Length: 113
Length: 112
Image (tube, rainbow over all chains, first blue to last red; front, side, top):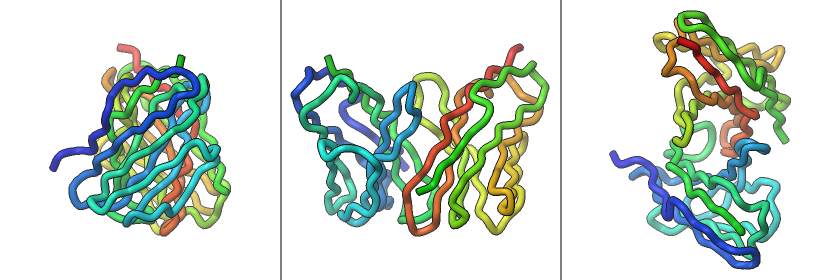
């Protein structure tokens, strides 16, 4: 099976812009979670989608949003970018919700200037 | 919510020695505890996990132990090799509540 894929791999944006990141889960996986990874804060949970519904949300401002499509692919959007949004954004997929093994994608490196 | 603390933040061992990384969690309802290895520039990879109905699990040189009463779990790597050098993350999750709380990571350096 193909692994989790994310596009784009690298992105450079300026403050105030918005960005959309994409994640394609492993075939058959219906749950997609998003994480922000920074050197100082480690892996921070953003949100999780299962069957096109957001089931869980982390402690991030409303500028961070996401959605999931019927084929389980997910997108994450960040509006009004700030310098502090520079990070590696990882998505992870699992078969279903609740205590299932999560498999990570390679991440999207976002740099905000 | 859950709070996961991980220690140490850095660990340096000689090749062939053992390495132990410890995590504590706060939510007694957490019942799934995975460990991830992240090599530099790569994605986190699941290396071993344990559920709350089991006290210990082994996979070759890697083992995880869980103490539900004390709410802590540990990763044990025996006969370490240079390729074990990476950042290791623990996590705690409550079943049917797929919100992963990760520890802050341990950078393991295995010296040849």
